[in-house]
Image 1: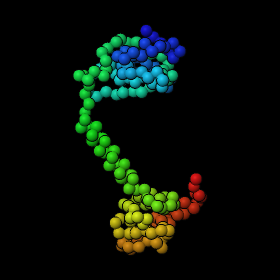
Image 2 (image 1 turned 90 degrees about the vertical axis):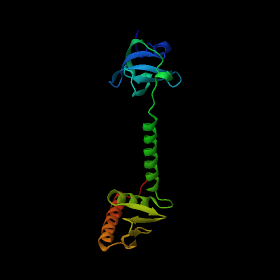
Image 3 (image 1 turned 120 degrees about the vertical axis):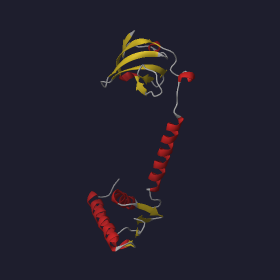
Image 4 (image 1 turned 180 degrees about the vertical axis):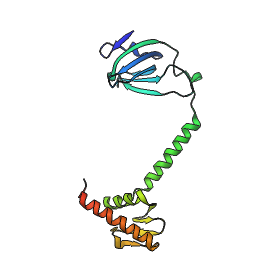
Length: 182
């Protein structure tokens, strides 16, 4: 059974069918049909024809299929007895994603202006910074308070203080040349 984008039916994408597919984007791959969702026109394929502990799953809108050919029929790819899920790996990835999301959230100032956040982001690129309410704490010793001007920099060693002032001046200049944002 061979097909093109205009001559296909639901039977062409029956669960377990092994297909060789060419997409309109130039990709070519072999895969086994896991499921086909008619309302969304999405075909879910398990790439490759070899079974093993690690498999790639591809979601493909069928209107991106240029042509395909039927390679054979196999057992249900979702047979629980033959599926392997590495829970430790998934839990480690989840934990890493959660830690990254928490770190990203801590870099967002609460109750600060867009300009203050822009200054924080510029300092973050080169120095360790964190928010303490609406003040920016740089290197755990230098504090920058609203309105985030060089004269609002206090604490720390003279060298650290000068470094923060310089970055503040450069960022404020960059923000002024860029003009008001959306």
